[in-house]
Image (cartoon, rainbow, N blue to C red):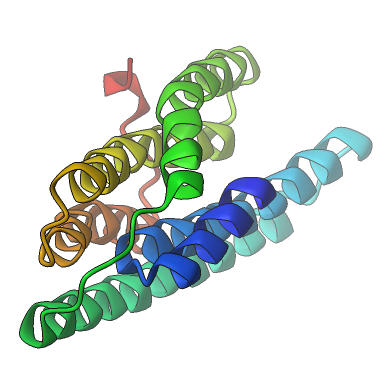
Length: 190
């Protein structure tokens, strides 16, 4: 995720692509979530009787932080996408961005399924929620790949701005789930 976020943000800045930049920032938010999950699971695994209240409190705070960051990202995406459409800003072709999108599009669903299998074995709602975030990243990477590919082939000035606006519903859904505290609907995930 560190490589994914770094490559996407760097490529986004170089190509003037709001789509790539938004994907990279979302990857950074997922990385934050994964770090909290790692801390939670390591604390639970190393303690004889883990303090469930502390774990639940940290999990809730981290989910809320992630939710607020996703809302901020969605607002940024709407403003930048709209601004790009008004100004007729065009993004350059980014082969590094296309590369990270291809890797994420094929690897994230595999990783999400593995996380779900382990979450079910452990009975971990936190790991299931993280698996759903990984699956969402996989969906976003397909949108990213389609947008970057279309931009590379067609060179239409508005493609990057329109494609970035397509990820807003994913970001809002992810933010609402994080802020609701209800967890995920993991039984519906493949």
